[in-house]
Amino acid sequence: MKRKTTFLAIGGYQPFLFCIGMYCVALCFSIFICSAIFHVLNPKTSIVRKSEVAAQTAAPASAGKQVLLTVTK
Image 1 (tube, rainbow, N blue to C red):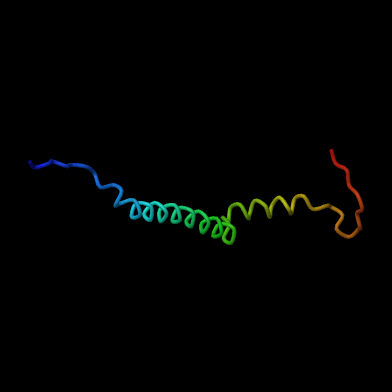
Image 2 (cartoon, rainbow, N blue to C red):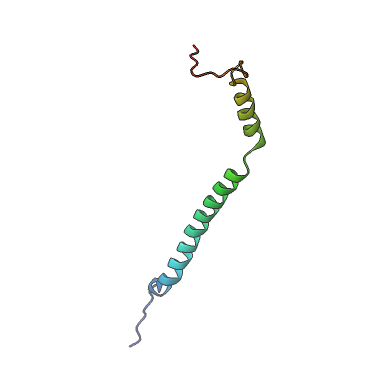
């Protein structure tokens, strides 16, 4: 008698699928981390200009005098 055995051999592919999965996870994390570092080192120029303008307008009007405390409303 001849047996028909048809079953999936997923158990043999498990290490291969695990390596592919870990590679995808590491790739996603490395893209996220590298892009975060890139944006820290090279910020957008529009954001830098806005912060420079805000810093210039927030400077006290009396540049020659020493100001210890200012209270504004």
